[in-house]
Image 1 (cartoon, rainbow, N blue to C red):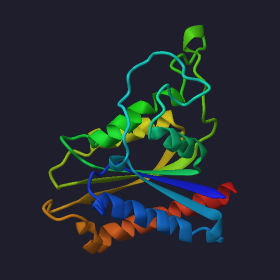
Image 2: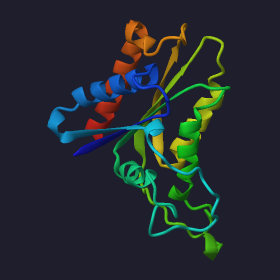
Image 3: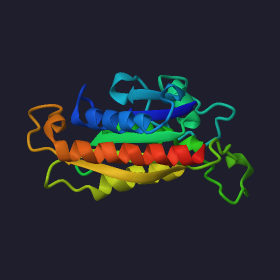
Image 4: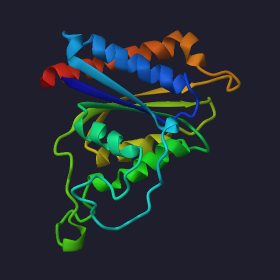
Amino acid sequence: MIKILSISGSPVVDSSTDILLDRIAQSLKSAIPNTSKVEVNNIRLNDLMFLPCQACGNAPAPNFCFFDDALTDVYKLLAACDCLLVGSPIYFDAVSAQLKAFMDRCNCFRPPDYKDQQEEFRFIKIIESKRPGAIVLVGDNDGWIEGPRRSIAGFFKWVEVESEGLVWYRSLDFNKKGTVASDTKTLEEARQLGQKLGQLLNEKK
């Protein structure tokens, strides 16, 4: 079973962020010869109740985190997925608060002591191999994309995900949700990115 995890940091249901993530996921799925062997899990962070990172400083092993909340099951999906899709609107030149809080809570997926010299910080490295992934960002023509892009790229590195592409939608009307649905160019970019991810997953089988 090929497991795809799609995480949306948008607070708006059926937003352009959600639409693009779904387009990538469905295109990816169609690129797999036996689609019944593909599982897509869609997570909308705004629907979940969870604490922001409390900077505990110690390893929570054998658990993913000291706190057992709505992210507990998401951690399991993240650790097990073969491909990760992450999307966010751009707010104040950054990702949404929902996505930032989630990424911070994934701190324990890697050990802070890379040289393994501090016994009290010997976190378990949960993920051992790279997986492909993709980024969706939604902003406007004047928005600064590099900040949110680097934030998600850093998160990808932390959870062993190799970014295979970015779809950036420049919305011209933030009074309406889901306007990307009529933007054929951006939808095609998302479709092509999904096809690329599907081909990569086929090659890894």
